[in-house]
Length: 550
Image (cartoon, rainbow, N blue to C red; front, side, top):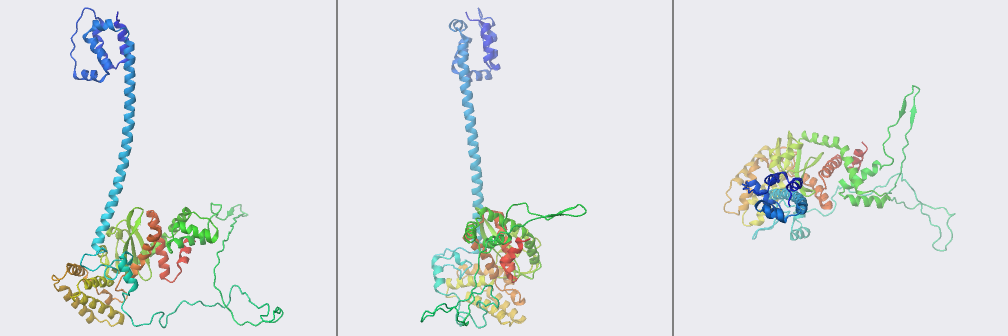
């Protein structure tokens, strides 16, 4: 006979509290019929339990007598329920782990998408700048190809055909002078010294004719030759530190470095010089030091040396920037350089005595303001036609005429039947010749400006669109074409700045890219100091050595 008490106690232990309400009708099973009204939540509970348990509940409710007769031990059913619940819990745990794994994959993909979006934005900015500068090397069908002689495209980006033409055919006009060094050229011939470091005597020992020994015969000097050579000498210097006790009891000692062994100043300066001035990568520097001296140095040590020396150069670097702020003439230019996977920009501001280079993520006014927030109020700024330079606070501007001449030469090749671009070239070259000859008067400057105004006022609608585009660009900077005629210290081109950023391109071509922002900053800082020292008649190596010895 089924016992309700036993069922209730077992059931209450094994089942959730939400199902205990099912037990109440079975306190007295005999002779009674019950009608149940189930709510929605109760029906949901019944659906979620396993099939065996649901079937048993149904039989218990609607056929109590049959259930009482057939069921002999409720513990078997409860054990089956418990097994099913454990399987469900295990399945839920596995699903939770899978959800966690998928969330991690999603987060990783989000990071990759963000990086791709950043690279895409950089690429779009670069494409826009190239389009604005008209530096596209691809030639339009039916139009001449742009190269370094008729556009702002550097020789390194020319097509193979243009490069071969440049190698086999000179793009310069003949000067009429003979090739080689001109009269008065200083030259670089080796000079003898009065007191050589070592003297080696070469005396004949045997007679060429009879073979007699000549040691005891006096000799006479007939010629001398001085040999200039270098030696790589590895010197290990041990610095010993002592202390002295004063009569007053004070212990006095010399400040000693907290290391057992370290590289000396000369080696540190050499490593910095090879990387910054000669643009040699870390690995090749380590190989060079090892081959010459036998000292094994790691790439990490090379990087640490550069970082340390860069920190010592902060004061000199800042001094260069401050002096540029008060300079009367400054040239500027910028060039792209990869830092990691991103395109950054290296800026140069320089004159005859100073060179200041820095790198930034931006090619706009933001980058300039970060170094020169007040602009260059005392300077005439010599640049190309990049719009950011004309937003600076400066005294005056001078546009690079070399760029304009190359662009006008392209128009000559585009349409040889017109003479507008040729007249523009003649006018610019005439102004340059006036400067070279020193034959400049206010009247001649006024005549040049009037001719240029009339030339730019001519209609070019009958010519190719490239003519009108070029003229619109000139009209924007027409007031800055002949500034160099009024100020003899202002150059008519920006070649000095372009030569200054060439080292950045060489560095990038050799090494591929800068690994980090810090590495790019270190190179710019030390490069600025080395170039400034060279412009002032000092050795680049000695300038770097002076930084190291601080």
